[in-house]
Each structure stands twice: as structure tokens, then as C-alpha cells.
Length: 210
Image: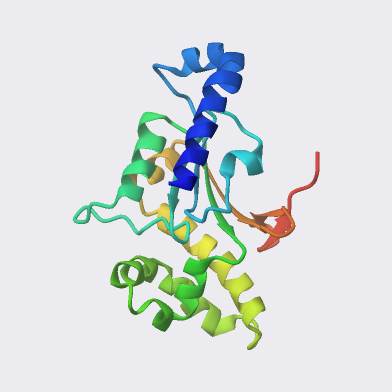
């Protein structure tokens, strides 16, 4: 119960110290939202989207799952991630979708080494959406250095999930209408650096500090 007590104290501080200072903002957001981006990232506890981007309530529509996966669209399979994508792009009309991977990702390790998740069948089935990234790594990735392979696979997985995203009808329509941009990022936990995919260079480059 110790951590529940810690969270309870945090809620108390929020209600007492934080909420009153931003009450007008929360009242404004109480019955509507207009987020500027769908931020699709990993469920990893070390990845905190609002902290990384320094955004506030109402600015990001966040979808999290192991491996920051956007499954290939299927009309026969009910997947919560697909519902989030469709709702964000169709109902909320977010102008941006960001798929953000990160360093030291357990899901990426599971994609690289499927045997490591063999005793977790639900996890293994989910990570099969990253199999294409592993295949591309095998075809042209770095050598045998584990750290470099994981880094490259993290980037490849972001690119593959961006491709999967484009199979969703809602995304296709928004792209055709010119009201949506798709971005791929990688967050480095140990340095705080965020790298974005640059299609012109075909690689991930650090964000310039502004």
C-alpha cells in the first residue's frame, strides 16, 4: 500500500496546490478538447510525453502500447490502438501524428529476440506487428553489436509503424485532404535527446534547440 499512499498524497497536492492555479484552464477543457497531435508512444514508464514535449492539458492525444505500435488496419479485428487513431484523426482532426520510439525498449528487445517473450503469448502476438522491422534489420542492418542492432531496430520499427499507420482509412483520407502530417521520433532516455526522421536525408536527426 505504500505506493498507493504516495499517489494519494500526490492527488492531494494536485487538488490543493496545482489545480487552483490552473482551474480556469481545466474548466475551459471540461466539455471539449482540441489536441494538436496524436502522440503514439511506448507504454514504458520512463517515457513521459508531456514532460518530453513540455505540453499541457488538452494539447496531446496520447496512445500508449508496448513498442509504440500502429497495427496494420483490419476491418475484422478490433484493436484499441486503431480506434484511437481513427478517433484522433476523424473526430478530433489532429493535424499531426507522432510515432515515438525510445532507447532501451523492452518491446524492441522482444522483437529482436522472439524467444525472450515465448512465455508471454499475448506479448508475442502483439510484437508480431514489428516483425517487418526485424526482417529489414536482418537484410541490411549493422553487424553483430547488440547495442547498435537495438538502436537501428528501434528506428526501423518507428518507420514500419508509420507505414502501418498509412493503412488506416481515416489516415488515408486525412492525407489526401492535406490536413495531416506523420512524424517519426526516437527519444533517448539517458540523454534526453529527441531525434526526428528526416525523409530528405533518410535518417533520424536531433531536434535543433530553439
